[in-house]
Length: 283
Image (cartoon, rainbow, N blue to C red; front, side):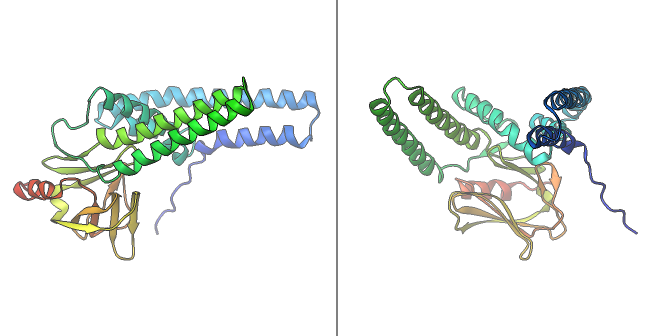
C-alpha cells in the first residue's frame, strides 16, 4: 500500500497569519484596541517563525552549496520554507535578472568547463521592438503629463516606471545571453534564461537532429504528456533530442513524473550543436 504524499503546511503559515490579521482588522469583529493587540501578537509570531526558519535555512543553504548545488536553487529551496515554492521562485526572479544584467555588462558568461551554445538570436528583434515601444510610450506619456500637469510628481513616477521596465527587459535579454546551453561530457544543461533549467544525461540522448518546430516568442517549458514530447524554445525550436524511453527530465532540480521521448529546444548554431553531440559520446 503506497503512502500518500505528506502535505507541507509550513510555507503557508506566514500567509495564513497575514490574511488572518487583515481579516480581523477589516471585519471590525474586535475593537480597535484589541485589534491592535492581536495584530502585534501576530506580527511577533510571524517574525519569530521567520527568523527561526532563516537561521535554520542559512545552515542548510551552506550545506547545499558545499555539495555543489546551484546557489540560486539552494536559495529557492530555503525560501520555499517560508512561502509556497512558486512565490519563492517569483521573488528571486528580479535579483537574478539584476545579476545577469551585471554579468552581461562585465562580459561574464556562464560557459566555463563546457561547450556553450546560445539560443537567443531569434528573440532579440522582438525584445528590441518591445523596448523601443516602451521607450516611445514613456516619452509620449511624460510629455503629455508635463503639458497638462506641469510640476506634477506623476511625470517623474511614470518616467521611473518606464525606466524600470527598460532595465528589466535588458535583464531578461541578459539572462538569455549569460546563461547559454552547456554541453558537458556526461550531461546537457539546457536553459531558459533565469526561468527554467533542464538537466539531461548524455547517456540518455539516443539521437540528435536539426529539426525545426514552429513557436512564437518564449515557450517556457512545455510537456505534452500524451505524445511524450517536451518543448523549451525561444522562437522556433531548431533541435530535436530523442531520449531513452525510460529517462526522466530533471527540470529545475526535480525529475518529471512522466517520461518524455522527444525534447525540442532552440539552439542558434544547430549544426554545430549536433556535431558536438555526435563527435563525442559518453562511455
